[in-house]
Amino acid sequence: MLTSAIKRIDHIAIVVRNLDDALAFYRDTLGVTPSQIIDFPREGVKIAFLPLGGPNGSEIELLEPTSAETGVARFLEKRGGGLHHICLEVPDIEQAIGDLRASGAMLLDDSPRPTAEGRGVFLHPKGAQGVLVELVQRATPTTAPAEEATSQGD
Ligand code: ZN
Image 1 (tube, rainbow, N blue to C red):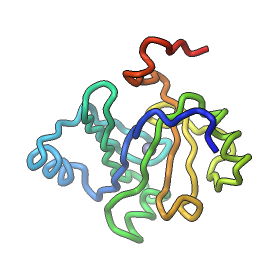
Image 2 (image 1 turned 90 degrees about the horizontal axis):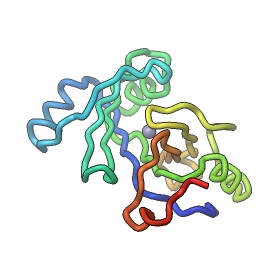
Image 3 (image 1 turned 45 degrees about the horizontal axis):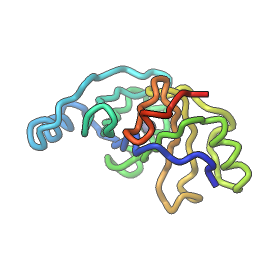
């Protein structure tokens, strides 16, 4: 079991075939404005970040594959667009990995991989109730309101 509490839902990642079409829905129908759109060649995707709920809120991330050789591209071909993974923010990714290994969790990464937010690991959907789950330690951690007084990053 994780020995440090999960801080928040960091983001929900949705695979889309075309970012502009997807943004037409999120921006023009739901009224959510992207904070930035980046190329993330390491994972072969373009990412649009749609922040919700202020500085300690969550984000929807729209992922458009930019290379056919990636997991995200294969996902799109096989299943069409849709929910790809959920991401939970943890305070210490190494500790989380150790805790999960001790619990026998099905990790897809041996060590943290660089992500758009910081460093993360993925858990296989087969061991996570059918959903691909990412844990991330943010390069710039968010501060949950209850922690503001005591947080000091030991
Ligand atoms: Zn993610």
